[in-house]
Image 1 (tube, rainbow, N blue to C red):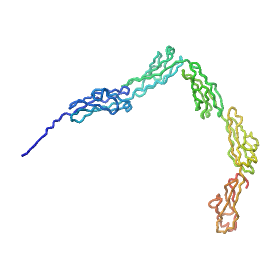
Image 2 (cartoon, rainbow, N blue to C red):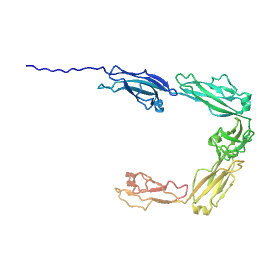
Image 3 (cartoon, rainbow, N blue to C red):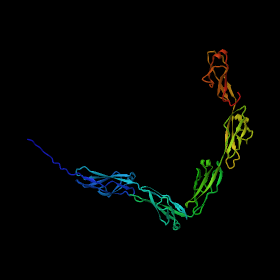
Length: 447
């Protein structure tokens, strides 16, 4: 007898979820109106979530609500919003998502606050970027803009009442904003009488003595100013000290001049300039450091002087004498004390320097004794034995070279004071050979 059983499965509809279309919003107008729908299933409820960290208003369980992006969302530029069905009664949750692209807000920069001289116009320089590229000027006063208020580099022409009032705000607002709200920023124009500025008289100074003590003055509508330079020098103690010292830089000296400008501060733009001309500095060269022999220690001089002067004078750290200390050329004769010390410094210093500082250069003279050379004792050696040499050079030299009147060879070389000499056949046939050791760095001393 066959027995059977069955089960009846009742299939209920799964939830369906729909959401609004993808949207593009501006960072300064980024609140997103959302409309979700949960239907055709066991539930009509849902919950919103975000890939970012913005806020749902009034809360994430409302199907119709607003999403307010966070600053992090705006920086990321995109956020995904997802509606997920809830209370699903055994059904799997169903989701639907939309993408929110967040474009940058306009950035408006009208420039910096400025002072304007009474009766003069103000040159504007505005900038609009990111969410817009155009702008419009407006004013809290009654002046006008030329060529028009839409030119970011317009000129503001103050009205008489602006000048009487003493100040006016100039506002730059972004235009053609698309989905963005207009952004605006302002600068303050302050109207002042023109100050009286005196940077000082043009000055000429020597390139190596050119620190210029400034004596600027600012009077009238302000008493403060700031120094600037067209070169690479510096101001001590600061460029806001009207009595600062200007210290020229290397480029100033190389160019031969520099302009120093004093500009009024806390008043309308006005400046005065002085030119500092930098003449050539003196330069001297005493010569290369020589070695001289104690037996003839006279030092021949060939100094050089150029630039601001072509004259110079010799001095010494020793007690010798110059043939003519005021001549670039000539000689120095060391004293007995100089030779005992073994050295002396000769200093060449520029003369007739005008406003320049004197320049100097030093020659260091080494006074050396004659070399003492020893080739060693005479030797009696068999023809098939090598000659082991034992040369020495002391006092006024330390290096030497072997030579021979024969035709043998020195090993490893002729500069080795302890070289080995190998007889040639001609040496052996002659029965003797002369080996000579001579100094090589003896500075013309006799030996």
